[in-house]
Length: 195
Image (cartoon, rainbow, N blue to C red):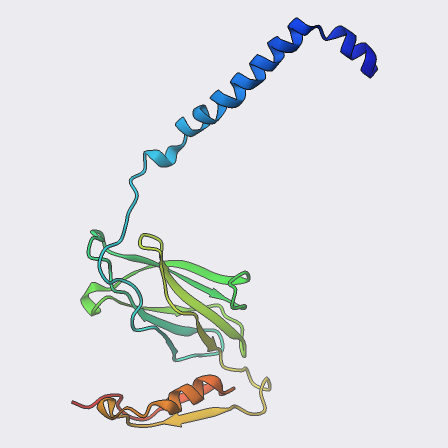
């Protein structure tokens, strides 16, 4: 059927009928779709008080295939259940190449800390990691860590050594310099704070 035959077959009465049906459908359909939305039945959670990852993240005790990752989570004042965090480990800082993503429970007996021994990693590889809480939408800073090289994978290692630090005296610019350097390992030989 060509255009002129189609227009002849379409009477004024059919055109008005089809227009009314289409207009009614575009008016009613969004209301029906919205009414079927399951999100309206789910109570939303709005975190209250100070909550999040105030102490940052840390990695330590690497081997060729494992590393321990740590954080501390402060729950929102209205989080009633034991907080569960998700640990993401990736080979890129955008977390598009995840190598691990697992749920971990906060240890309330150890001041709301978490430490996870991540296994099955590749030797001499840099990894990015973060912790997040889907209940409060809190996300830690992104940490970086590196596994130890296997025999023959590295000819040298760039290392920084730091020692005792007096918290009240300040002068912590050396830690910033280390963070901005290309150092691969930091060894801390002393205490961080004195009373």
